[in-house]
Image (cartoon, rainbow, N blue to C red; front, top):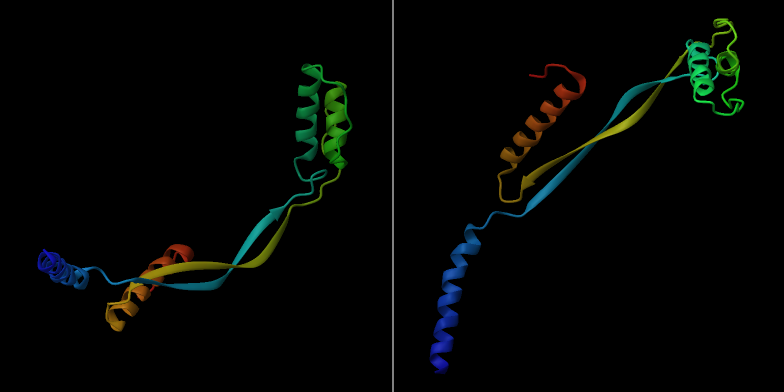
Length: 145
């Protein structure tokens, strides 16, 4: 009886060892981060180029819905337009314009590339380089050869 237990354990071990050898290698990751320049448009909430129009439209809508008048916190042309629209005054148009500004800033873009520890170094580097070039073409819309 004891021999059978030992034999079954040996047979199980003999059958599992080749399966472990065939199992895929453990995976690793490489993360690469690089600077990317981005921009955003900054609008003055009270005096951007369409502020009076927006305020007039919202003021007229608030009056139609019979909402009580509340001074607008944005101020500037928006508040003037809101008041004119709310009280049904004639459209006066924008008097002061603060142009939109473009703010440019730099941030990081990161990519993670995966590889298998069992792969050859050349194969891993080639795969990571191919993935990196694909991402670079997509991010910058350029051709890399």
